[in-house]
Image 1: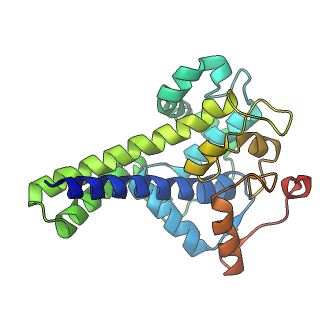
Image 2: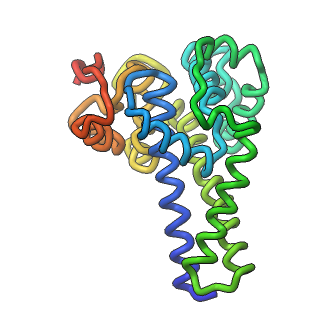
Length: 253
């Protein structure tokens, strides 16, 4: 295996992690969970499909846990507050805290009472099936598009999927830990903003803004802040593939 092949594999892994991050913030977070954005059914399906194959995230579970986080933000009952669990525990074990909460049927029932399943949601054990199918497809892609032998390409493909998953999980962990402890605040809540984190998390690093106006389709409050997902949302809106209303955050800027 050559150095260039390794570099291309790493680049593909990082790009896949960023794609998953954009699908998470646009589809899963801003549209499905907070309903600050309405996506065209085709766009919503494609983003859900990407998350199904690349992360195994179950949207209803994610939405329920996140809504509970907002209700009890940094108070007793918050599933992953660094003020309660500690910064390092949330940073490195946020996935464990998240899975623990998704295993509570009362959380799912209470915070997503009127959930409507889409086509992918009807797949049995989607949280387990998705990663298996996704890793297999990525391995086959490496077999087809690299000069490596079958088994070596397959190993690199599977390793790339798991590395991507690790990056994706860590980026989410940063939001729930660092962006509740370190950074600046535009508004009076415990979440914080870190622009450099926003650059690598599709805008999620502007977390103080988000906690003040959770139903806003955009996360930047002022012109000097940048929400990388916002230009994509605006483009989708101009193409007739998304709808949103001007939020209180936009008026506050």
